[in-house]
Length: 399
Image 1 (cartoon, rainbow, N blue to C red):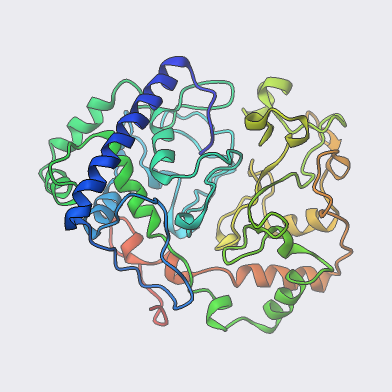
Image 2 (image 1 turned 45 degrees about the vertical axis):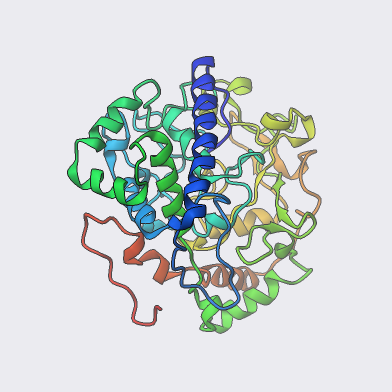
């Protein structure tokens, strides 16, 4: 979810909740300094450290289990039509398979749903807001987002928080889980957000053919191409989760030449191009207000990328084959109205996006490498699944 231009009441509500959250963090730190906190038993490869996010929220098994139940519970939306899992499906790498997500009210979101694999390691959480760093803070956004030119009402509980908490408090199972997770604390939105962030922090994916050394020969050739200067893929999709910009050394934001509406450097934006833009935005420039940041969006992780399509910030690219073709051509030349324009000539395009001249065989090898980043263990891990549904079948080789 992204930074919102929300109405004033929503701003005050979110600010107030953040202040309460910070105070409760201090109280929590005091209680946990007395020995309450237990370290969550992450089972990670020897070369992978535990996620540090959220930085001052203790992860316990009770909080993670509470968060898991909440993640799949439609009672968190005002009309009880949606849960977090409605937009973040495990079998799709915790994306939703849609071009752009939909809120519980049926409105279409401006952007494509990002996956949650290894999200606890990311220092930036959304498509275009570099300032939103904490999962527990980010979780408040879908609860309170309003209907504006660039945002939608998602779970739509603004001003009705008591309805949600009363639903949970009336359930004996939830009362017990809240007592176990947060002794002495109320089952309020702050603790709901904290539990949800605890669960999301455990969504770790490191059992792919790439890590396990079981890649096909084609995928191995694709890997060599990916890490070569002839393609330069690794410069923007570097690091353990294939989302670090090697130039910046962190998560970064690039314009990859997807659009250049009317040759003005624009990306589709409802404020500029009318309702046909479907509330799409200009990207990082909404935060920085800099012209040169128009069309810049965060480089997403490539983990499980074969199951997280459609692609790009607006879901406008259907397949991995299409993605490779766009990068081979150094951008996309849109020839259909209303967004006609040659993205290859976008003035804000990252200079590293350049014509590659790939052969058909090289394109095929790159796609096989991307498919080798699929973690079937992650996609079928019972600990991440709906607690009220039959557990998925885990492949025999999974740890």
